[in-house]
Image 1 (cartoon, rainbow, N blue to C red):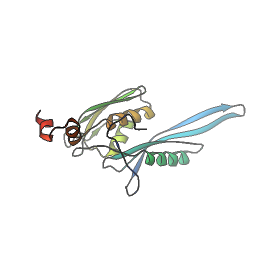
Image 2 (cartoon, rainbow, N blue to C red):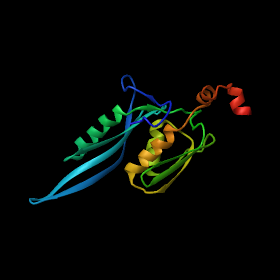
Image 3 (cartoon, rainbow, N blue to C red):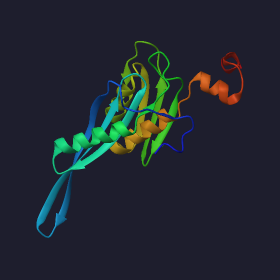
Image 4 (tube, helix red, strand yellow):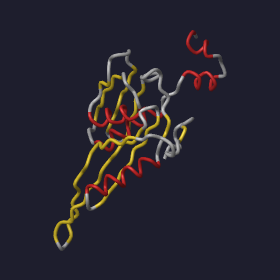
Length: 174
């Protein structure tokens, strides 16, 4: 799932205090010759609010089982996101399908300036100060995946220094 990203650290859920946030529930209808068959799909974001986050999708005939399946799926897709004192290391754009997301670090005390699905993901990661803008599609599935696209492209200063083969001081001072 995360093959296209470099240096993404996947995390096992054991020993983590994970909290789940329900992003959205959709009622889906399948029309058969016997009438309409209703089902539900749920998208959930799971995180420990300390840099580890994952998202999952669950489908079922009942809402509760769809949410439970989504939480289990989210625990299988956990990744570690680099944070910098409660905010992001740098600004980043992400996109998935028709959804585009822009996230930008903010000074201490700003809070999470984000709407809907982006807010759920950023709060689950543990970001306390961030500015964001969601453009294009507002479909929660695609917005969550676009936010993950942006988060997975983030790199902290140590990673950049080691990739370039220079000291940390040279990364900041040029």
